[in-house]
Image 1 (cartoon, rainbow, N blue to C red):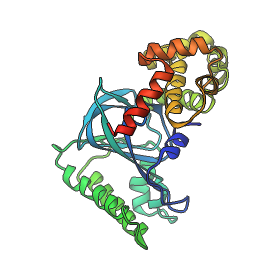
Image 2: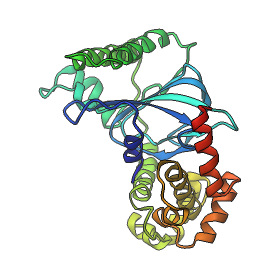
Image 3: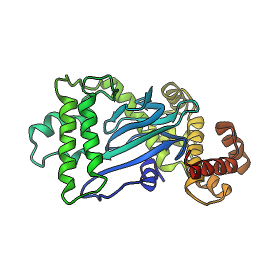
Image 4: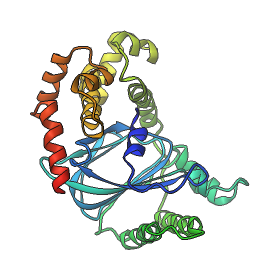
Length: 299
């Protein structure tokens, strides 16, 4: 189960299919899950903070965000969400494919804006706060799309598209679009390959030798590269990812702790329990019971 599959499993609102790739749903950290690990995908993503505060990471840079902030994640950008100390954060997640706005005949909208954005050939401002000059109009278009999604009237797809075009007009209007630095892209592309591999194979046995071979690196070069890029060893990252997915499954399924530990790739239950308690300061069973009780109370 990769990140998007889990998020789709958790969706509160999903009334469209592949013919209209636009999905929106509400999430809460830590009520729904403790964090969203670093990942990437080809869809455009918008994170709209509704209440509280947290941390958003974009291309390895972490920024605090709070109520009202709007975060734009371009296709292919590494990103993750985490809790800020003991704070709670409620946010809306909007994910859609830019292809839905592109013309089959390559018009100027596609060539000048959407294609460069989709292929990581341009940089956009990632975070807008209520203090930004464009914020009010950006928020307006998102709110309008949300409003029509409450009832989904006939032909609402047309209105949602119009909202997205209005939104991108505000993003690109009077703004110089900078090309993404080639060196930065090269560094991130290799890291994205590693992260996507972990996302798709974390349930399996993964060794340093496997990853070094996969990246066409020596083992020593791979370990040094990963530590410099992520600030932790690959094994630490892999275990941390597995623990985050285990925490999600503890809340989303009725499976036993043993089954979940095996499902996320831990071969030893005692080691899993120790690692989980070290990260979350609570046992897996207590984590499940505490979070489920809090969810029932609506806290």
